[in-house]
Length: 63
Image (cartoon, one colour):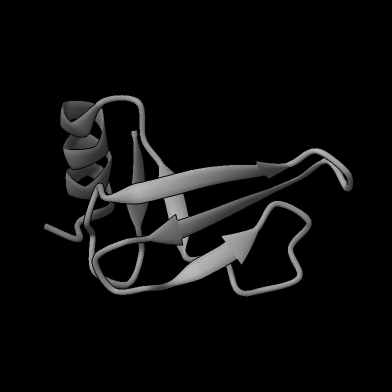
């Protein structure tokens, strides 16, 4: 699953441009977006398991 770093929504759409080979991700919740080439600020992150993500945050003392 991919999540937006701005609003923590999982409503992220991935688009692939066949001519340039570039992936673009956009959040349908807050309209943030970035490209796989790093041209824009990265606003989408991917975590395979929510529980593992929570454990990682707890280990860093964030939550």
